Length: 250
Image (cartoon, rainbow, N blue to C red; front, top):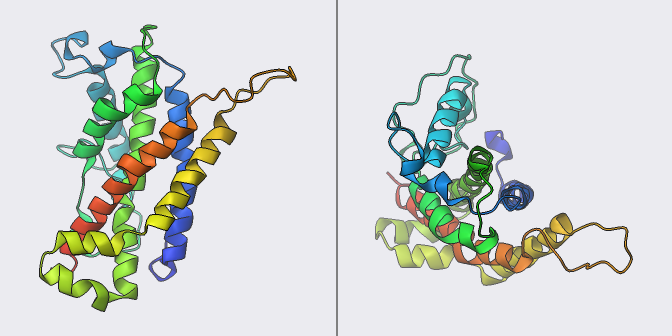
């Protein structure tokens, strides 16, 4: 995204497109049961400290770092420590974020929320032994969620540019509550929740040639997807926005 094309409308269009990626990633993950050993450190040999999911994410991020993925300011690794350098020439990405605020990364919160709160709401209990495939599906979910939530930095930057006088007093006062109120639009959030529920119905319906088939059976419960957005995705996005704005005048 070029700097001069960064508008609230263009950012909103991107967020709407990212809804598709998130919903499809949830559908793919729901193909597998919970497969608890994926998250147990005891399932991995002593050569690696941590659960299989952590191993898959760290190794994948190391490979993607070599390919230059994290040179893009819209990408945020879950394990940024000791990432290898890129082996490809750097791309000249537009500098549209305020440098002191650009480094915000809340992937630890996203990881904890996904593992401890979200998974149990849309994945069936059970164990089919497909732990590596489960971890790979989790990675896609985590990446989609991280990209969407950290897009809050772009939202905050655009809103600040459009009305700096509206935000500066609260920023100077370090008033998180006021900033959160300025960033909250309940009607917009309600529309997002309704839209993602409708998308989950469309994307996740079971297709059958039987006219008497159950047309209300979905691969992921649409009400759960709506709840994801209302209870976690949008609040975490606004948290990123607030943290960004608090550094916007640095």
